[in-house]
Image (tube, rainbow, N blue to C red; front, side):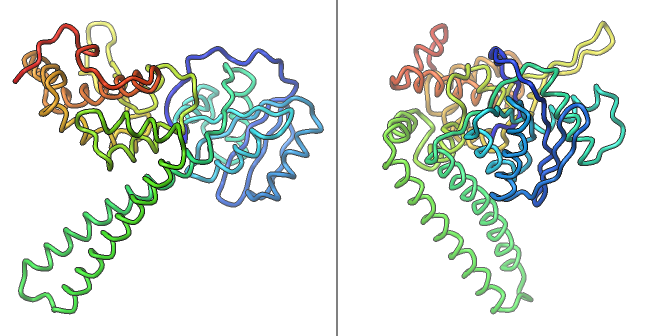
Length: 342
């Protein structure tokens, strides 16, 4: 889903008659239509049809909602397909900050919907467009694999701790080993399913081949990277990609008294940042151009973690370029002024 960046494209030119905000819950949609109409609908396919029919009575409508977990996705797909409605999907942090500018001290579903309706009216409106079905399926697969991988690490740590003491019953050790083995099989099966899905889609297959040809990116990393990137709207700039990842720098400087060290915003997709970490770590050691870039940052007294984040950001720039131009990775083009190290 679209998480944490502000699009830089031009707002929509078509004039809207009605401005609407929807607070999305797991079971309920709280809807506010300016100036003072409110309704609630179930967050289900039937409720989505009722909502669209109700909004259709007002004329062309702009709707804003938050990317709340996964509960917004089916609603977003339904609104995108409906005639006379365009939908913007906001990062929850952006929606929260906008509500603060309105002076809202309380937080209720109704007030949140009102704030989102006000956002529809005041702010530059960028309509959300649905990704392909395959892209959504791949993202779901990659994120499920990611969650199982985290759980596998936890199971492995539990087993290591249990094996460290003779007081652990053998049945506990056997259960932990069976659980770990089953988890590993599930992950392998899901990775195979993800690769099979990629092979059935021409664009995904081409992008996958371009990814695995890059230094530091093998099949596993490529699945996770493609799962996040394939669902992004087309036409985004590389700066928007970086903002979506949350790897864009956040500066805190004010006058002469405030000059805090820069950091990444972390206002984007944690899934994409996690998918970029291992490729950045490997490429900073194996790819001569990325290694030269990494070493150049260290020579300027940058912290190792900061230098690694910069490498991850460069990798994202490289992926954007190879996807846009459909050309293999060439580190010499990305870093023309750096001399590769041995």
